[in-house]
Length: 532
Image (cartoon, rainbow, N blue to C red):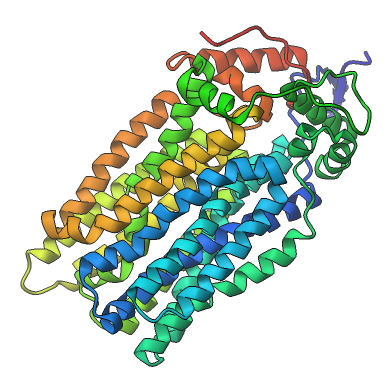
């Protein structure tokens, strides 16, 4: 009975019962502290974007007054960083394959440091636009590389919670930006907004120092033929020697390295050039890659078009429309938004590897639909009332907080987690960069048109529009996105390929996992193709 596990079922006087491993409840995996620390350091890159979003929501009020710019100029200034970040995102995929994930993170922090300093010393609108161009490139690098590195360094059992850390730090950055706005709002007008923007250089300094303590991604090391270095990193970031061996074997297979090659340095088989990768990803994708690309791009598209940047970036204007007129009160209300958003993203990190991606995502988007619809109703009532009833004002504020809470518990973190884990190794950097590019384009569109949008269709109408987009997103997620919880990065492709038959593929994967493995996800998978 060497292949069975003895378990006492707890009935007095009854002998122990032998339970096959496949039927025994899986043991809770240990958390690897080294992988946890690496994920935190890498994810701190995302604080750069968060701080900029948070600080611009308040600084924009004072910049408009000090520089005498129009609403259109303010919209462009607020959202243009997202467009500029496309340059960094486009360059980050190839750069990370060239110099490594670790030094790409360092490069992102250095570029943003320069951009933040330039914004702090800006003297006019044109100077500000140039400064935001520099900062935007750094943000683009950071957005692409942090989730990719975290997904590649994390064991499968905790990949969801660790890969959600970039979103955690985006929210932490937003909160810091809101607090900075409130703290510097009492300074002289021209000095206050410059301090608000310039302080953003401080987190990038700490990040640059922290990067020096990080190891390189084991997947990048394997692609360079440095198996010995990759083995050392995997030994530190895995929960057991067996898991480290399995992870190394998966990476070697994806990189085209024969499993019997175990020298510290090997010659990696010639890989496709970068243009061939783009052809495989965009021009001639297989059914599996096409499904993965649609899911990866779609989740980024709906994250932004559901209106989150409009709420976070323009929260002072939303609160003003709701009836709060004092600047200090508006900025204090935005701090409450930051606290709620950060609190619920922390809750999400504990649920991702327990509840799963799909249940959290669908519940999150459902909550967003309900809260943004109610917010639209409340703002419409306020718009059409001569006297603002206190209960309607309170309802509008509560719905803003409910919206960011429901976003943060699912849609926020899962976007980065999901899109960073589903692409095959050979396409991961470029595939994720496509998703980030779509994310930034749509964020830029929303950020640079929100004031014009609510002037055209009323502020309540704008949120009804976001509600409609979120409803379409919920249908998209329910129909096309498979559950990826607990799957190794190299198993993902078995769940994709047939848009409407992925559920049967998932059941087949789980069935073969139980037959060929130990019930914990660490066994061998015995299966044929499920590409449909």
